[in-house]
Length: 549
Image (cartoon, rainbow, N blue to C red; front, side):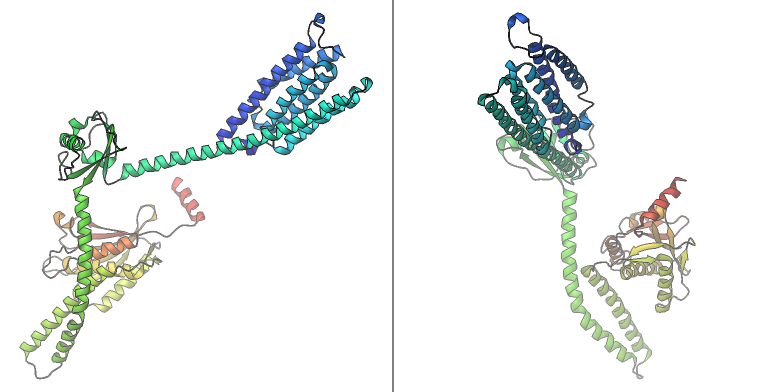
């Protein structure tokens, strides 16, 4: 007989099975008491006539004990509900047939009570088993009618009654089985919907809590019911027990009252507490014409300014790119003409110096144009797995061959003997490190001394690959260091302020973090924290075992 695992897969189905099984066992006790009342009825009553009193008394007593035991074992029988229900139905059918044989006068009532057993079992059992027990009960009653009453020559009426009872058994078990399946499907759907709603509510709560816009829920008594993290910060981090809006933010409370009474919204920025950004409050009701609860949205003006700045930078980048593209062709013509003039033998030293100045400024303008075009292109990264130590060594060799360093020095240093693997786009990593090295050679020198720049590769905590460009110059002042990654910020009269900005943008595109670290004793360090390659399951397990030792 199949087990009951499919029916107890969910808590709701388990509870339903428990209730149905409890009803069946409780009804069996009542049924046994009815049988006992009939079997032990006073002799003077005269009904029903017992064909076999000893059989009836013994059978009823055992059945009552069986019913009480099954009721007491109701909870323990839950893991094997189908087996228990099937076995007890066999006992119910056998006892009912014997009760009809012993108390023939009460056969109709006994047969009707057996229909309740079969129907309750059909709520739990599959359709095939339910039909099997309905057929077993029908055969039992028909068999007793045909063979048990053979001495009394059963007539057509008794056979018709037995057939009708059998038909009723099949009808009720089929109906209850269908109802049971629909009930379980409905409960499963309701449980799934409940889980989905709970998950959705949790997601909504998380989204609202992490929104950059402050959100408050205020009732008609001016008390705050809900507040997200942004609103809590914009109101000056109030205590958990402070819920009166009038005390926490009097200006916000005044604007809320003005909006509710006049319907007009004051959109001027205001500061709700000392040391926090200004906000622009907006109000809305939870339901139309319902002033019991109002949602307040606090828009941080600094975020709005930042978005406006980003839009301005985007537009400026596109405009600059178009202008740079137009400048490129005449600039190339100027430089080519200057190179032709430099080849003339009739030029004196003054003219040659002028041509040299033209070439130098053409080179500088070309660098500016390249930076602007890189700012506008922002090509997608194509990451690869690199051996960071070998890559840094090859980069330094290529840079030294293509640039005249003079007395300056550039070295690649691997801090550990083990290879350091990282995932990055080689071309974009080349541009990032080239900008960092160029800045280090230009600004990372003490007066009267050559620049000493190192490209260091090492592994950080948890195996994170790190590449550092370190110089021994005067370092960067803290106020300047806070702005060096902003676009168009520069401290050099010939700088564009785009080199470090582009380096950080390309680092972000490669899921890397670029930061400035001041070196103790003088100097600067630009640290690039890259993404390590994905580990295989075996490597992950080995690393976890090593960490626990």
